[in-house]
Image (tube, rainbow, N blue to C red; front, side, top):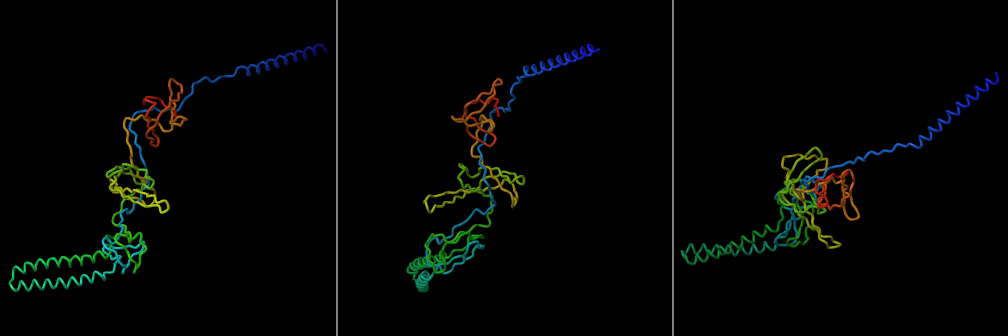
Length: 334
């Protein structure tokens, strides 16, 4: 009986040993046979193509009153006796803004009036006497004196500055009643309230070759999407008081092609096309990258990625013009 039990025990041990050996062999096999991924790489690509590309500049626009006039005494200077202006003042056309003393001119007019009256009396007397020859000469003299008188009276107009339009006074010089002003010195500036336009100010001088009639695209979010054209340019020149350098800023007056109402909120963007090129080789801008020698793109040729050196031209947001290095038939890796 004991021998039988021992035999069964040894059989169990042998079976367990065999199973253990098989398990070790399976582990060895798992470590040796590692699967290898031999599939090809899938690139995100786009095709180069030949088409039209535009170079554009987008600037913010405002609905504004762009037209203004610097007011001055154009022919004469003098002493201010009436000064009716201040900044942000609303005025109407014809309002008297500034007036100069006319004392000296009034005296000249008074003297000339005496001379004119004398010439008139002489002429009348000769006509009454029937002396035609002398009357003709007196008529010439009368006309001369009348012209001189009229000229002096007309000069009174040049001693007064009136508002040339309905508008707002935006700046006023350092003048007051009793101050002296010279001819052609700006006394104040008025903005014409009747002329309201969409205006773009190119404060960084980003635009060039923009002329009358240049087409633009206009957008205020999704609220207003239209086109328009440049109808005027306004150039403002100022000097830096420290460096003395002259700074020129150009504003463009825009007329939309259709009657639109811009909202009081939201930026108005005006896009100018500054350059157009047809038959250009075009690739996605995202595909172009800088190298130590310039620019390059990766091209997929027979499943292989190859770096190609290129020169670029117009870069317009998502599109870039390739001037050399490609022929427009390539598959570009993004």
